[in-house]
Amino acid sequence: MTDAPPRSASLSERLDRLPFTRRHLRVLTGSGIGWALDAMDVGLISFVIAALAAQWSLEPTQTAWIASISFVGMAVGASVGGLLADRFGRRQVFAVTLLIYGIATGASALVGGLAALLVLRFLVGLGLGAELPVASTYVSEFAPARMRGRLIVILEAFWAIGWTAAALIGFLVIPSSENGWRWAFALGAIPAAYALIVRWGLPESARWLARRGRFAEADAVVRSFEDAAGIAERAESDVRADERPAAALSARERLATLWSAEFRVRTACLWLVWFCVNFSYYGAFIWIPSILVSQGYDLVRSFGFTLIITLAQLPGYAVAAWLIEVWGRRLTLSVFLAGSAVAAILFGTASEEWVVIATGMALSFFNLGAWGALYAVTPEMYPTSLRATGSGWAAGVGRIASIVAPLTVPLLLAAGGAPLLFVVFAAFFGVASAAAWGLLDRRGRALDDR
Image (tube, rainbow, N blue to C red; front, top):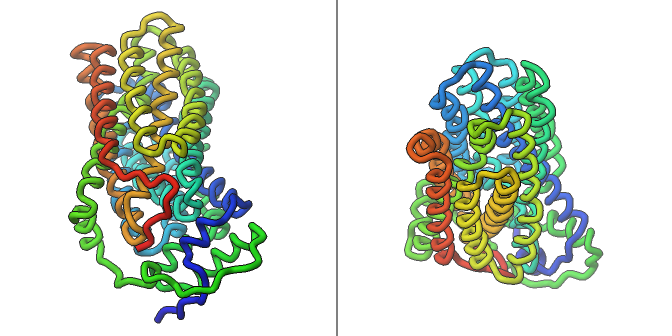
């Protein structure tokens, strides 16, 4: 039995009229720290692979599976996590996923062989894959419309912080001893403790609560944001029809709706962008340390180059965060993907050290700026009742590419070396750049609360 709807202004209007408050900052940083820890885990594996390849005398196919198996888990996690978040709430799923992958990462420090590592990496991916689309959906549902895109890009920028932390650990910890990679994994257990903070410290999405008919709870959440903003007077009006609880759709019905006449074009384009971006990003960045080692640089030097390249992610996010509210979602995403394509070709053909670093930084700048724009636009494609499902399945389809990419890299390197490999990555970026124009651009517009 649901609560009676409160006599107040629509939730969407109340959330969108708010200034940025300390409550928004808490939601953003609380989700962002989890995002950074996710990035640290994904980034660490690229350094661990390079170390284990030498320590365990692994074949290229075996190292490729260490990278790919976590993406198998991510594909499953993203698809299931979105469905669960639309059913049980954003906050609960967010916390559980952090707990799963934090524990599995910490346990990876104790493994003695490849088989055990692969099992744990799958579990890590399961938690990680579910967390990312849920977190972006969660933050987007609190963000005022006029700054929503910018806040999601800032959320995505926490990825650069986490990846930089991974690069520092890779540079300072992993080469320091034979068990350096174990200490790196042990640091990845931090999210297990952070999950408790997330579960009890952040509010549930007011939009999701309203769609489930829990109006009193939704109103209390919005009032806490209004109080933080110093808004004392509230308009009195009926709750709008699109905020009244609707009959809960089954998982199958939600998936079918993604391909209804209203959503099929944006779903197809969104899945294509996610697939192409995942293929090129994970194919390139998971393998960059190993590729540099194969080109004659020692482990410490290649890790140092990777750290410098990683630092270019932060200005990429900063520029994307500004442009996304100036140019809009589609143009920003398309331009950054086109820039990624050009940078990939230049990086693949670079030979001198300064050119390797400069073109690698350009690739990092454009690619991570594109990621920020993609995470901003994705939750806006669907109404509240479908938002986590749509975001999760787009991410899940993308993870299929992240499974395939690391397995494809050794074959492409054998066939044509780094030049061929990065031309292929550039082609995928180009396709994604074109597909971005099939997406909906909701810059400055309220979220669809159906």
